[in-house]
Amino acid sequence: MLSLKCNPNPSFLHSLAPFKPVTAPKTQTLKPSKSTHSNSSIQSVLQWNRKPELAGETPRVVVITSGKGGVGKTTTTANVGLSLARLGFSVVAIDADVGLRNLDLLLGLENRVNYTLVEVMNGDCRLDQALVRDKRWSNFELLCISKPRSKLPLGFGGKALVWLVDALKSRPEGSPDFIIVDCPAGIDAGFITAITPANEAVLVTTPDITSLRDADRVTGLLECDGIRDIKMIVNRVRTDMIKGEDMMSVLDVQEMLGLSLLGVIPEDSEVIRSTNRGYPLVLNKPPTLAGLAFEQAAWRLVEQDTMQAVMVEEEPKKRGFFSFFGG
Image 1 (cartoon, one colour):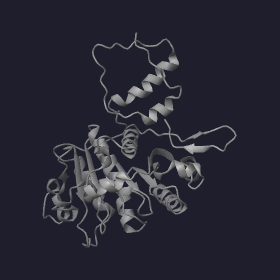
Image 2: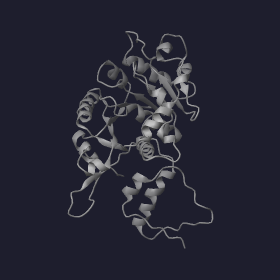
Image 3: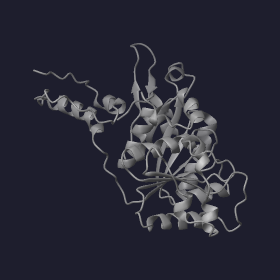
Image 4: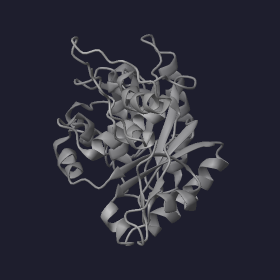
């Protein structure tokens, strides 16, 4: 008889289990346990073996923003976007950073960007010519607003991105499931342009006071623009520094910003390697911890789900530290 030992904490299993399908040998038969608690634990492990159910109306226009630069917006856009494509959803990623375009570099598509949205609006090319299709995942496409060090027309603004979203909805091959907008840093005209067509936002922050102040300011601006569905990704988390009380915990960050938690990305040196190679983390084999965290964040984004930070006590008679594992 095959026995299954289950961890009594389903939420912990939920956070660590990858969503790649796992097939058992045909000779094995799994008999359900009589214990209801054990069954729920097994399901929490195996739920990543199914395709997530897409919630909301399509296309879902998601802007990834932060306010502060250098916190990982573009890295999040590349990895979450490709994770969505690997789950079987059609994705169009828009690099809305005009002067400092980097999304094409992280995806390894910099040599294939011949046309941008500016050429499309000027009538120099068609929209399908400006969309760059990824060779690894054909349901992922990239569109850049303009070429580096180029000046946008004076009339370019949020209405141009609204027109773009409408054009993507009505294209002959069908509307994409997700339109992800990589927002530039700051809260100037580029920020306003990027958030105009969005109906939900992912706020990327790091556990430091400068990033949190900017994130709080951006949250207010998003709400003023009518975007109420705002979720947060906490990037570059180090549990050793949290344990030593040198870094704010994820629970502290969540309490300060008052936002739902979409994912927590641990500090990973592989991020720099993947950036320089133009090969996103989620494609690495074997996967890294940060890559798995991005995949799980993409899963929650599809189902409009969230995770919860949990306080874990390390040893009795010692101060506990906040872990970022959640369900």
